[in-house]
Length: 258
Image (cartoon, rainbow, N blue to C red; front, side, top):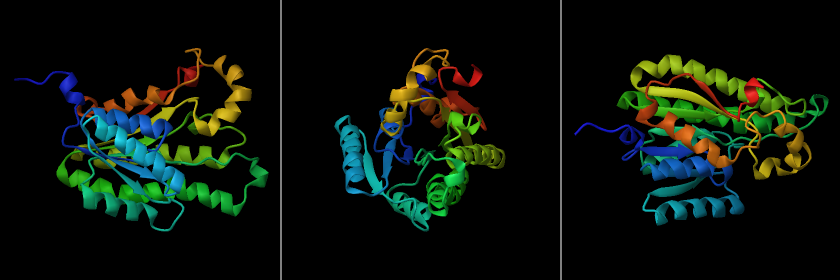
């Protein structure tokens, strides 16, 4: 029997690693992939609070009949990406990699210190690069793989207080284009999913003061929610998106064109 359009969104038999998946955007994407049938590796940074949150996501997936496991790894540590890749692949080969974990340390550019610069580079670029190095070649060898990097509208509209963070997101977009060209002919797609103003715990204080003015510049007329990213991520991670490669997909309510 021929498959239906909806069948092409199914991820049965696939394993997905979502970094920074213990809450907010990462959690929403992980739950969507699990609902589509994937087994989930739920990454967190390793603190007690993060481990507890990640375990809660695992339980939620298991209660719905899915399979998941939590993996703690601090991306500021040396070789963190390779260590995480080794731990997850010992559990199951990775077919889908969603690079969601990142940190932003807002400050005026004159005040940026080496310590704060290095921390953002480690989490947002160095450890993700190690994951790409470790996992993408094996996807290509198997003839199927999906990589989704979670970017930001900051890629093209950098906030004056987020010079390092915005720069890392711009670099990540460049990487997705680079790898899309390298691996597209081997069954691996690499795309960047760029959220706009998504209300999360990380920016709740900022949005309390800036949110109303920001909404006026968003054609959709509201701030985004983490769940708004789930459908787009599922498309890019499934066979339904097999011919989408090297795309920068905004999920921003139209802010990028306003």
